[in-house]
Amino acid sequence: MTAIVLHVELTLHAEHRDAYLTRALQHRVNVRANEPACQRFEISVEEDNPNLVRLYEVYDDQAAVEHHMQTPYMIAYREETAPMIADRKLTRALMTHE
Image (cartoon, rainbow, N blue to C red; front, side, top):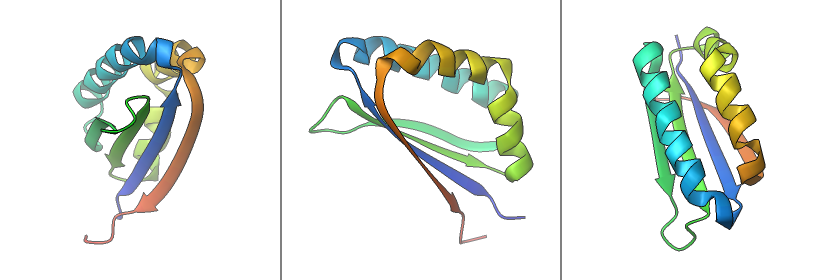
C-alpha cells in the first residue's frame, strides 16, 4: 500500500487571511480526529508572502482520499472557504520511502 500525498497551494485574498487560517485549523482538527487513515495534515504560511498557504496531507491510500473528500466537514470547509481563496493548486504524489 502506497500512501498518497496531497500538496495544496492556496493564494488567499488578503482581507480573508485570518478568517481562512482560523477555518483551516478547525478543519485540520476535524480531519485528525475523524480520519485515522490521514497520517499527516499540516498547514504552513510562506514567510515572505503571508497570503500563500500550503496544506500538506498524507493519506494511507486512494480510498482514504476519497473518504476525506466526501465527509460533511470537508464539503462544508470547501464551501465556506471558496470566497477566501484567489487561486488553488493541487499536486498529488506518492510516498516513495515505504
